[in-house]
Length: 123
Image (cartoon, one colour):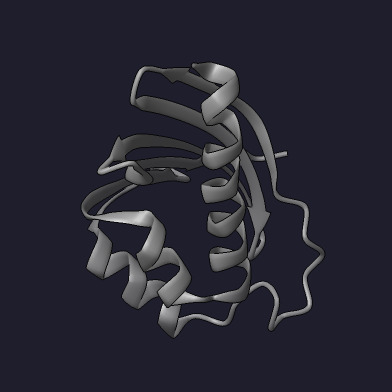
């Protein structure tokens, strides 16, 4: 099961990286479940957002691509059990050293991000 599903999950993660790096809200909307929730802890500040709120944030900020940042995002690990997956990602951008944990579920034969948990780790 893992080997058959790893490529589709990696494709979703690649689209996620591209979406946040380029500020492409439509690309992000396509890979998130509409009821996805996002939780963050950035330097002691707790963030809780709906997908819609998150997409507004992405739309209204200058993207890493627009700021000519170097693309350094990477997949650290993926665990898949049945129709659920967890991905650990390193997402350095916009002056932050983000680490994301994404929960994905295979719904109607399509992998979607259903939850995002993220933090910034000082280097």
